[in-house]
Amino acid sequence: MEHYVLDWISRYGYPAIFGLLMLGIVGLPVPDETLLAFTGYLIFSHHLKPVPAFATVLAGTICGITLSYTLGRTFGLALIHRFGKYVHLTEERLAKAHRFFERVGHWSLTFGYFVPGVRHLTAYAAGVSYVQPHIFALFAYLGALLWASTFVSLGYFLGDRWEVVSAQIHHHLVIAACVLGGVVVVYLVWRKVRTGKR
Image (tube, rainbow, N blue to C red; front, side):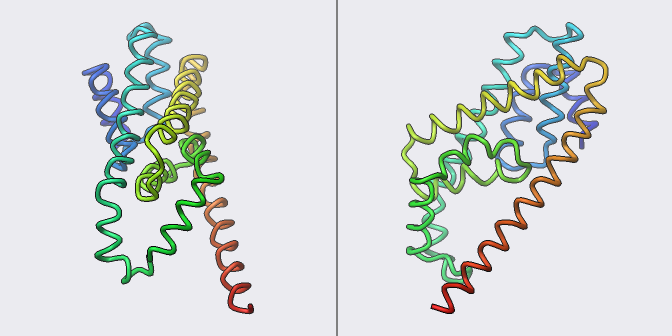
């Protein structure tokens, strides 16, 4: 998939960057970090202009995360009402998710971009939890700016070495995501056992 993504960007430039990033953020299997680093490399090698390239990256990311949020806000509750009981998703748990976003969950919209798999879910969860659009936009768009700036800059400053280093970073991010997922699972199990004892 990665080879095709890089080939499309080389052929079609800005439209390919925008479309692929938007679809990748929504959840399709697009290697987002690699795409961003490659965009930075193309700026370094003068195949793309810095301002239009970064504006395209930011627009694709923002459109993708907004679409995810809109899907969660539009269809999430209806799906929960219809199928939630089969997977133990109740109104009470939905209310807990909303309170989580009220306390600290907003920051997952900002920093979730940096964890593979998480950025595809945070916006859906925010939509389902009915996080207000202006709050969503503040945290999610700030995250888009930080994430895009980080990886485009990485590709630009690494130049010809971008691919090797980008692969290493992706590998470490996957490991971090697995560790984080394990910690969350352990915490949830501990919390359930603790609640059961009470």
